[in-house]
Length: 350
Image 1 (cartoon, rainbow, N blue to C red):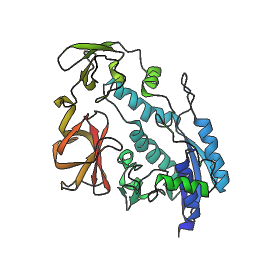
Image 2 (cartoon, rainbow, N blue to C red):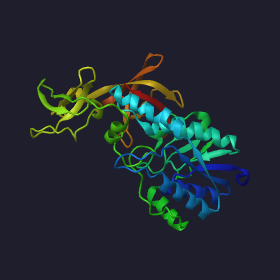
Image 3 (cartoon, one colour):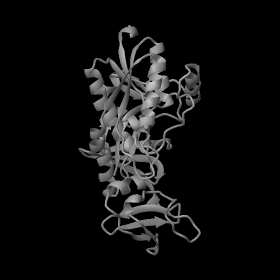
Image 4 (cartoon, rainbow, N blue to C red):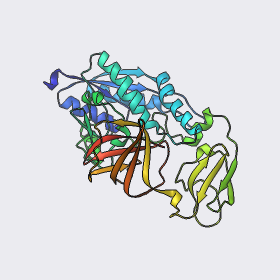
C-alpha cells in the first residue's frame, strides 16, 4: 500500500517541487523533503539564491508537516557538472549542464543517498512521466522536460515518481494556492542549474582564463567584426555578435585553433542546415527501431522532426537521417529521440 512507502521529494524551493510533495502526501505516502545544496558561491553581481531557496523549501516542509533534510552535493556538483561544462566550452562546444545534473546528481547521487536512508522512491517536480522503468512525455507538452531526463537509467526510473505528469503549469499554480503553499506565486528560476540568474558568459569568465579576441568571418571570407572569445558563441546564435551592416548574421561554426568565429547573413546558407545528425555518447532507455513514428528533438521545446533512418557508424557513434533539414545543430547539445510519446534516449550532437 502507498501508505507504507517512503518518498524523498527533492524540494528546490520552487512551486513545482512544492506541489509534488503536497500531492504525494495527499496520496498517502510517507513524504520526506530534501533540499539539494549543489551550489552556494556568490559571483560578482550575481548573488547565489541558495539560502532563499533553502528557506522556502523548509517553509513548505513545515506547512505540509513533513520531515526535512539537506543533502550537500556541492563538491560532486562542481566535479561532475561545472567542470564538465567548463571543459566543453573550452573545447568549443556548447554543453548542457541541466542534462548532466540530472544524470550525475539528481538521479544518481541523490537517488543513492535517499535509498540508503530508507526511501522506497524519490520524486521531483519535473514535468515527465515514468512507467515500468521507461520515460514518457508529460501531459503539458509545453512544459515537458523529458529532453533533460533522457540520460536517466531504467533502474532509476523504476525508483522515481513524477507527481506532475498529468498536470499543466496553470493547474499546478492553482494546486499551490489550494494547498496554501508559500511558493504559490514564486517566479520560475532562470539561468544555470542551481547557480542562479547569472548568464553563461559571466559564469565562464569567473572560472576560465581571459579569452583572446579574434576575427568574425562571413560566408564570403570577409572579416566583419571582432569577437571577445570564441568560447562564448554558439551555433545559430544571432544576438550579441556586435556586427554591423544591416542584415542579421548567424554563427555557422568556430575554429578554436585559429580563434575565429564564422557567420553568415544568409538564413538559407547550407552551413546552417543539416539533413543528418551525428551523435556520440548514446544512451538508450529502449533500443531505437526506425519507424515512421520515430522523431527527434535537438533542443528543449524545439520541433519534433521525423527520423527516417539510424545508422550505427561505430560503437559510440550514430547518424540520424532526417525527413527535412534542421537549422543550427549545436555540438555539445543533445538529440533526444521519441517513439510516439515515449522518450527512448539519444546522444550528444557532434
